[in-house]
Image: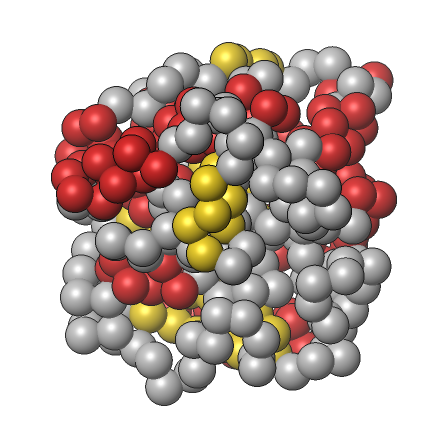
Length: 310
């Protein structure tokens, strides 16, 4: 298996103030664990800047212009209660888009079997015209549209196992039968969306909410009972994972009790779907995960499984 890791130093310069949980150390923790001997065969690429054309497939021009206009020359600009820009945020967000598109290019052309996008800020809370929840541009959504527009993918599946529901991705694809969005997440919890009866205009939204305190058994039941059958019926040309690791038992922003083995298991099942329908094509995009130890260990298990080394 050739697995690609895409990142850029700009993701380390974006920060939202002292004490903010979505901090540069998150990416540093992942990069440190990827220095291990077991990751020596992991291919690595530097993220380019995302193009305006790619972003416009998901977000309107006025929204992009507002984000650009909000970027401060110094200090911070507050977009909402927990989403802030510093002078380096715009570049980091643009390179997050570029990283997601590069990963899709590599996988769709067969140069890589699968890819992990290790960038921040995350993206799955960014709605079509709203930045929120630490997110500016929706990287997973941009990746899906890029696969369709540039590589001719007819059906793209996005599976999100972040502890928080990806309201942005759901909003963007609510009325689009060509994209399946599936999510496991804690409910009730921020942002308040993701009920099982939220199914999209064409039944293309599949939510499997979990309760506070649920662990691996409930997570696997949700995957096997709702998520995997929906993916199987959809038959995607590409699988995208919104890989948030804040459902880990150690994470301070959620109350689910997953461990590294649960993320490894889910990755393997999603790879099975990709193998069955998409010639193995899978792109994983980093979302949440705020306990550094839980994040690093979970990302390690996730990437090892993608490499076929687990």
